[in-house]
Image 1 (spheres, chains in turn blue, yellow):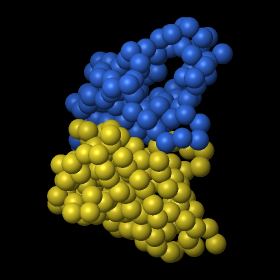
Image 2: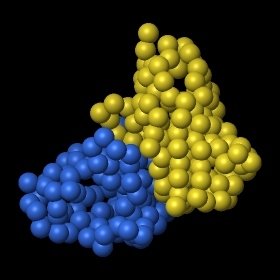
Image 3: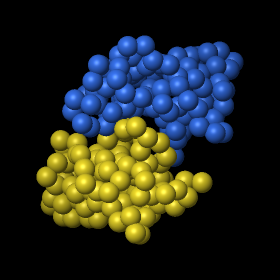
Length: 110
Length: 117
C-alpha cells in the first residue's frame, strides 16, 4: 500500500491529452515539492518533472506538473505511442521522514 | 552530465549479505543528498534510504531498518548500501538517485539483487 495514491492505469488516443493524479496528505504533497518519473519498459526511471512543475532540460513541453492542496497532477498533451510507460509521483514525507512514491500509473496510448 | 553507476548486485542466499556501490560523476557529489530506491520484479518503485551530504543524517524505510546501512565516501564520489540478513522479499533492482528537495532527481541504471536458495 503506497503512501501516495495513483490510478493503476489510464488510456487515451494518440494526439489526445491525459492527466494522472497523485493523492497524498499535508505531511507530504501539500508541504513538499513533487517529482514525476517515467519508466519505459525494461529501463530505469527518468525524471520528467521536478519541484512540482519544472521540466529538466530535454523534456518536452507536452509534459506538465501542478499541485493543489494534497494532490498533484501530471499532464501529457499530444499523446504519442512512445509515451506508453509507467509514471510515478514522488515526494518527501516530513512527518515520517521518509521518501514516498505513488504506486505507479500505466499509460496506454490506444 | 550526471552519471550514476550501480554495481555489486547478484545472487545471494537468504540470510546473506551484499554491498552495493554507486559511482557518481558529472556533479559535485559531496554537495548532494543521495537516495537508494528499489523495484521488485513487476512492481513499483519503493524508497529505501536517504543520506545527507556529509553522512551525518541517514533515514531508512521500516522494511530495511536495522538490516541495511547506507554510507558514502565523498573522496571517492561513491555511495554504498550494505545489506545484511537478506530476505527473499529484498529481491529487486536497486537504484541510486541524486536528491532534490527530498525526491530522486537523477537515476542510475540499477543493479539486480536476487535473494534465493
